[in-house]
Amino acid sequence: MRKADRNMCVEAPSPRMLAATAGLRRQLRIQTIVLTVVGIEVIIIVALRAWNAL
Image 1 (tube, rainbow, N blue to C red):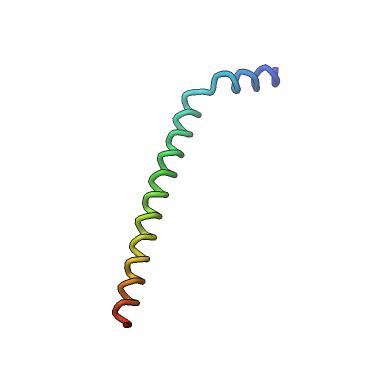
Image 2 (cartoon, one colour):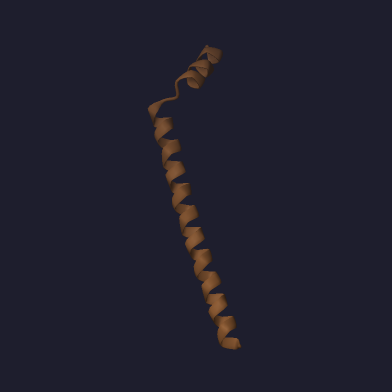
């Protein structure tokens, strides 16, 4: 029974699992976008401070 259940899961994942993975992917994409924007802002702030220091 357990082996059959595992094979069923591998062949056809449940819609709930697909939705969960899609949600995780969306969350990861949003996180990467936010991190890149924050990184760019930090770089700009550091560059402006260095420019003002000169």
